[in-house]
Image 1 (cartoon, rainbow, N blue to C red):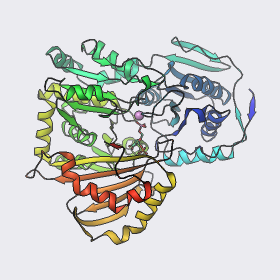
Image 2 (cartoon, rainbow, N blue to C red):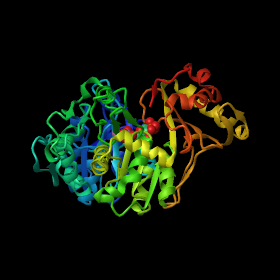
Image 3 (cartoon, rainbow, N blue to C red):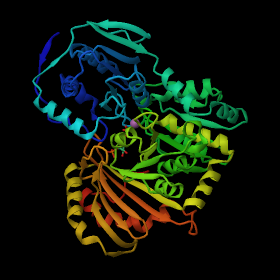
Image 4 (cartoon, helix red, strand yellow):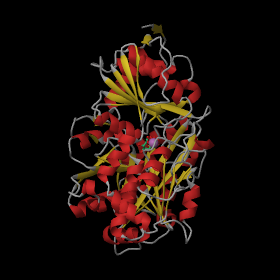
Length: 541
Ligand code: VG1
Ligand code: CO
């Protein structure tokens, strides 16, 4: 098995969700190989073990899969389970790792980032629980990447991945599997497919945008074939290496076709979408967009109506910037609620320990203990199942939810592609100012606490520092600042703005009206314009 000599790259530090770079960076000689070897070298006990491998089908997926197969063989793995054509959604990888009880898996994706030769690529390792490598393990990958001098790769022909079946590279078995079958079977176990089928038979109108990304084949199988939704329910359902030139990001801007359709008086009852790798979701009822934070809260409040969750939830968790709408449900229903840093890797320990059964993030990620990743189609099926049982519109369910728990008005302002130094300076200046802010009167109310969020993991007792700057007000309003850890160019500043109003207050305000004072303050408090040259965000989510 040939050993190839190499030199370290200095930028292979995993971010919020694995290593993400421009495709051109990944195409540089040894770049992918170095990082894959850094992963393998950091994992003791891999000899003879099984790995799951697949990606979202974006440009470079096919090349990277072949390289990783040859490296797995040379690094002593005994068996690799790979999706047909190298394709597997992120939740499907997580499920396969758990179902087949493997050592772990590798996911090739840059999620919602654009694809194609000019776009982004990414790689992520998930451990034996099916979840993203925890922070300490990701740090070990980075350390190994800094010290690397060589990597191992088998001298072998490319494997034919176009048909299911098994073949070998040296002594290692390569098993090509149908990417959809096991995942679809899991969904049938969790949800009442009969009730959802009846919903569709009764004339319920549903549209799903796969955004030319990985969920196309999953969505057609599940919604159109198994649940009997009319053909054409799934749009943009053929995965393309460049996602048809679009951003596979399920938000009102990039999924505007279904979003606009749903906002019409005679629009579909439910419109939904997922992202590049199938772990995010967008939910829009007729003339009723649902924010991801509210969707998480509604799912928590109604999960007992769904067979897989009928015994009730044990506990729930949300990432810190996600609105506290979930906490209101937890409090009322008497289950525990946890607050973790941004990124799915922090939910893994709580899920594994059985402390929580449901979790989510404001960035359109929702999931449960069925896998160890967020899961876009799962979230859509949750809504369909809840709608099938409650026999009400999305708008009626939302109105009822707010009337019961109050409403967390919420927006995220993204300042994208800003100068990295300006972004660091902004955060540094605000960090310094934090101790002076408590007690300050502002047009948005009195600041009660200003701090930097750190997370103590109650299971493995590690602490993660520097997870976002928080400005908290007495009435539960807040402004949170953090820098994105998934971008590939410059820096992205995310500002999360939230205001809670109780059940006797105005629950039907326009969101931007409800947040005006907080939005203005978010700009002045951090001197956003001075540090970034921008006064308005590029994206409001
Ligand atoms: C973003 C989101 C975060 C999410 C991450 C990965 O990270 O804010 O909530 O977990 O993307 O999602 P950041 O660091 O850019 O804010 V995905 O769909 O890329 O796997
Ligand atoms: Co994703």
